[in-house]
Image 1 (tube, one colour):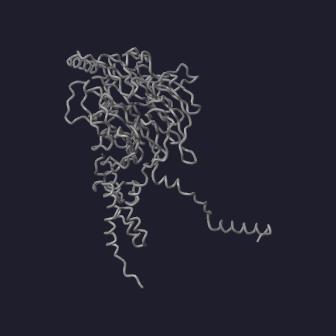
Image 2 (cartoon, rainbow, N blue to C red):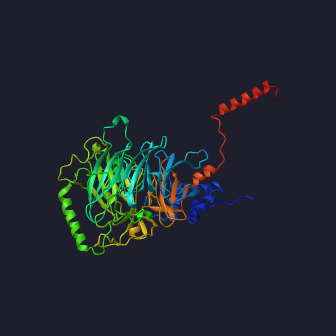
Image 3 (tube, rainbow, N blue to C red):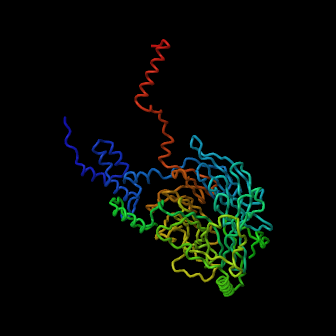
Length: 599
């Protein structure tokens, strides 16, 4: 009996449009005709927008070759499968950091240890390599770590418990060759964290209170170790000295090495992209994709003069130690101090050079190094991103020290640029090319007015993830959102985020980590823990490997479904290089058998 004529392709396509994507793939195995229809580009375009709920005004990623493969990338290449849980820490795990090669990562914890882990075991598992306890140096806990550019040194930042229980920070530098301690640097306040400027120099902070509401933050450049042959060379140099008002301080320093941005890893510069496509059309080329039209989302002594100030153990949740005020202090007294501080700052601050951050002329672009940090001007809670350019002659501790190049009237340095987030900043992270800065914040109510610096506005439970373009120094017009936090202003703590080529991930207080796609501005996965997720980290060698650290004292290892399948599939036997070598191999085997008298 002969089968009747098959359904026309148009009707099969119309039916497939009403089916889930997995049913479409199974139906495509029925026959050749259905298989061809199941790979139709129009079909997968419709499935893509409907499944991921993306506005149709958002174009396909410029690097995508087809709608089917783009659907598969978002579905199959997200590190959302838990493959291992590391339980070697005995208290809350606060931070994770990968080496630049991705072969190692470090973890910091309330158990006051920094641990190093190996990610290149043959079986794909992760194992502990080394653990160092910092309690012998009178640390309370470790809170942050960072590998230098060539992965030979590890910067470890923690809370140092000084005399009379006063709390400030300290930075330790550990050699990764033999795990010896090379140097220790005071760091105050401790949520400055510290960071590498280059392979051999790191940045730390110090804080000096001038009044009840006014202080001075000093940022120092430190050599990571003292060479024997350079005993008379400076190992420390003051970078910047910045005035703080309204009880604010500089915190969370990081360095962005902004290249010329010829090939950005995320196309958010709509004007530049449109101009590039216009040039391609003029040169006779064809543009395959439309421009992106969617919105994405006071002395200089290193010793602390005020070391004997008491601290009421507020390090329990890593919040900033705030100056204490008597209830009898009138609001007008604080306001008067702020006015005097502003007047002194206007007269004693070195003016910034507007050319430092101005866009270069066409053909004259140059690499720039920015120092980024959180700060404020209205209240003690950090609500602004401060930007200060570091010039080439400031990259080393050689040369003038302690601000000798500064005149006596120019006591403070000014900020080159400030971006106000209008909320409490609780996290920052750079894209791999340092083009974009991602900022976690909890927003203030719209239109709020701050009348008392010591009483900041209430903060939202929803965490906004802002995107700042460091080329244009402007914030993108819509932030990412899905994660939540619940602590009030005075108990707010840092939640570390990380950015890979295609994704951005963050922890949250709602016992989950989150992953978003950077191009489509959508949340792709939630990573479950039993307590607050403090930190996440992508492997720079493979963005399908992600780590998450939690207050539940564990580190979880997440891989993509694709990588899990590859790890579970049996290894394939090696194939012969070509047909001739295969035949020659069989001929040699037969000859050897005959020579041995075997049939």
